Amino acid sequence: MTEQQSTPQLPEPQPQASQTAGAAASQASYTFTAPDGTAALRRRQRAQTVLLLLVIAGLGAQWWVSHAELRDLRSEVAQRLQSGDNSNNELKGVLKAVQESTKELQSRVSVLDSKQAESQSQQLALEQMYQDLNKNRDDWALSEIEEVLSTADQQLELAGNVQGALIALQNADKSLSRSDKPQFIAIRRALARDIDRLKALPTVDIPGIAVRLDSAIGQIDNMPLLVDEKPVESASEPKPQRVSPAVAGKASAAPAKSKAAAAVPAEAPASAWSQWLAGARETWQSMSTEMWAELRQLVRIREVQTPEAILLSPGQAYFVRENLKLRLLNARLALLSRNEFAFRNDLASAQDTIAKYFDTRAKQVQTTQALLKQVQGSNLAIQLPTLAESLNAVRNYKARH
Image (cartoon, rainbow, N blue to C red; front, side, top):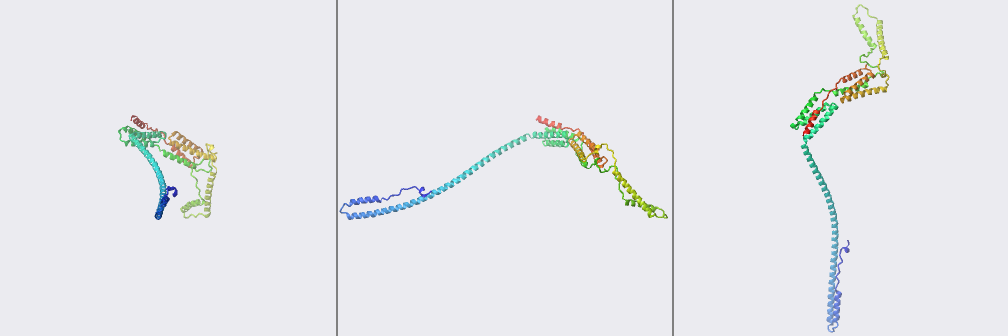
């Protein structure tokens, strides 16, 4: 904003010299008509002229001073207006920042109010839940005990898990003993009777039987089949030991020396030729014995009741071993699920497979058969009780209360 735009146009003072001069002139003309006062009139006119000039000079000076003051006033007003505009702009910026901060604070306050209301509602809900839990603690405990006993009863009936049922009953009795209420005495009596019935059952070493089955499964790959070409070492016939000729000569020389020592001193010593013949004879006997043993291993005659076991190809032999493993694995699963019929059926099928396709003279096969017979002799037919008495006691108490 410029100085001319900001400052108002003030009327400039007009000098009154023209009016004064006109009046003086009219007076002079009026006085000039008088013939007697010409000199006095001139002096008067001069004095009026000087006075008029002084007045004009004073008015000019006053105008100049007022004009300078007005100019200074205009510049000061313009500066003050400019500073006021700047201050207004700064105030506008500050006001805008304050408004934005106020809005942000209002939003934060609203968020805090919502969170406070949410926390209050949650606190009220927690207090209500705590009151409900305190009020229905016995109901919750009985419901939990009923659920645990129902699960243990199902496990006992389906899988024969006696230890799991015992643990469930003992935990339920411990939970009821903490409340020390006489109303739970009937339930604890039923739990104690079920615990005694489960402890009186004969124990079946399920893990031990499963370990024996795993051991039998691990020996299948080392068991020889009837179709194997290599000679099988029998469990009853010992393998003949080979004796070298030098050892045989030494062994025959030792009795000869003892006989010579026991002979009569007068008898002449044996000649070198007879010793050489004896050594050659013993060497020939040992070599012929060894050759006869090797010839007997070349040709073997066996009587096999299942000819198809001799005609197995290598691929079929692999599947025979794998099928036997699957049979034993099925027997293991039936053992863990207390399915005695499937357990004994799979063991019988596995023993038939071993007797049909494997060489029963081998030591590994005989060991596996003995292990399977020992496993098959285990008794799994145990009549397991139920937890119906404890479950009925809990349910009857909940129905009455």
